[in-house]
Amino acid sequence: MTPIRQIRATWDTTSITVYQAYDDAIADAAVRAQKFVAPFSFARMTWVKPSFLWMMERSGWATKAGQRRVLSVRVRRDAFDDAVTRAVSTSVAHARSMIRVQWDPERDLRGAKLPYRSLQLGLGREVISAYASEWILGIEDVTKRVKHVAALRRRGAWERAAECLPVERPYAVGGA
Image: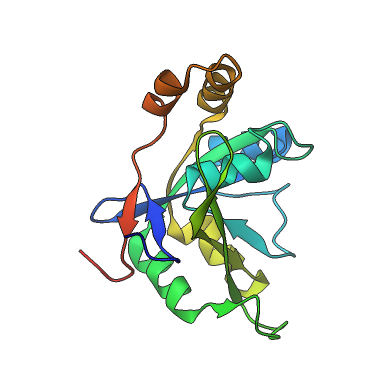
């Protein structure tokens, strides 16, 4: 049985992939620099999502204003794990927390809520600079893939759409 809260992600021995959605200017600059640079905002909390399908729900499959470009960001596992262990739940009133964690209902390919929750990790101003430059191993624009899967969904080609999803598996912080 799937635990109510579980990180599911694409990961290997050194990295974990998180997703973020931005406008063209931020996405283009990040892909070009392979790190987050202006016009990315270092002055406000940024949220990363290890679950591809949760990112699709949040961005409306890359259709929402300011979220029309989806980036796959490979980050160092040690940095991600450290952030998760230091995170404070958004349900706790710690407005000054540097790192926040929120668990939202995971989604299936059709957009339906699943009975378990996926992690969103909020990184505050105090850690954004490190995230934006030191944690990142690579940034890929996956918007074309997102649009392709969205088109398959609209046509009802569910099996073909599922084959295009990234492979995600349970992730244990500090695990092998």
